[in-house]
Length: 91
Image (cartoon, rainbow, N blue to C red; front, side, top):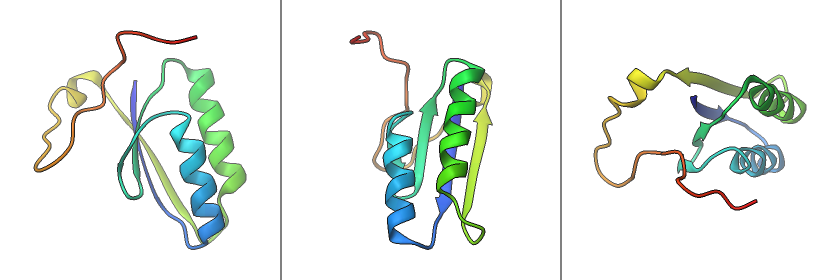
């Protein structure tokens, strides 16, 4: 499933840690927005756990599931490509 993750993190160090963690799950599509294709609930819980460890009370992180039907209706105005599942995986 596709998850849209957006954050507003006040501290540079925490913001960088969050971005680094999110890159393990999907590409950055805007400065503080990531699109993460996550294949199972275990990986979703891993993502949420890592973000909870990083976030402080004054931060805001939103993780929004996007169903396949809605993801297929994605409109990009300007630069960018839709996040897609890779055809080839390197293990």
